[in-house]
Length: 239
Image (cartoon, rainbow, N blue to C red; front, side, top):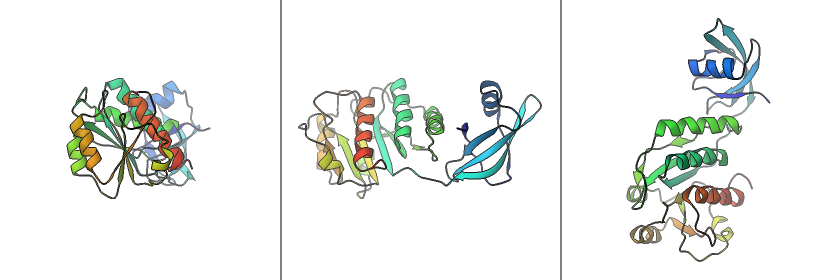
């Protein structure tokens, strides 16, 4: 299998692309690639292409784009809205959410959010790395944080918002999820759950659907991946 690399530039047959310092270091020093070696590249919008490597001295490397090997595929329109948590937990959500097919990540601030700090540049870098490793051809969009009240105020009524409710009776999620097709939003609250005010607000909205994730209380990152997996298996691009 060819090494994959995301490149933020136009891809077309015959294009000669000069790589930056980090890309040079990765191919030349980490992977020990040589002149003429092949890799595959993608830019998130134009499919995947085979390219050959040409080194120029000790500090420069070019890629010659040779042929398209995959047409562009876009992940289903799934928006994951998650309460901002500790940095390593956020990294886990971004990485695994990208692998599971999230198209948009929306950090939110709730009454019980532990940290309002969110490094959007780092999150974008992590999503690119995850896409490279999982044969994904598009890159998720990472949004700036917003409050839960703002999220609900601006929500598109045509997009169902599926949220995990730890106070809901434990019932099979299949009946709820099987009737929801993209575009869809998935909302995961903070450690400790939504406040009473937030939960009542969610219940009052016509576009929301609640679901139980079982008899145990899950951490936010575990809940995110559990609900994503359920949705993809029942109504997403796994079925």
